[in-house]
Length: 156
Image 1 (tube, rainbow, N blue to C red):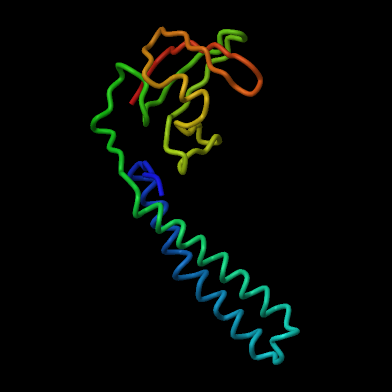
Image 2 (cartoon, rainbow, N blue to C red; image 1 turned 120 degrees about the vertical axis):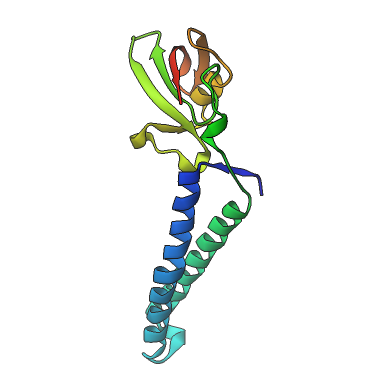
């Protein structure tokens, strides 16, 4: 598995999710399985089959999260600067075509959340911005075509 880059906040969210799944969801599903088993013939018991399937999906999710945590590298914002765009920077950009100004924080894939204005560093826009300076105009190939953005400000 590839290295997963996380902020300290992202690491703690992932650990909280693992804890919740193991301490709340796992016992809940085990109880459902026990209840369905008590109803008799397992060969024709749809509740039992559904509960076993839910258990399998839960265990797969827990294993996936644990694997990500095991391969995680915590990125500290102590090493950040505003000379060039890099991961964990907040970047204010202006769409050169319509003049719209947007601000995004560049984060790891697992922490991306557009509602919080956090975009993954693997997105085309973030890839186009990385390594550039304030005042640079970058061309980014997106599914809709080629877009130009001016980097207005780089923040920590």
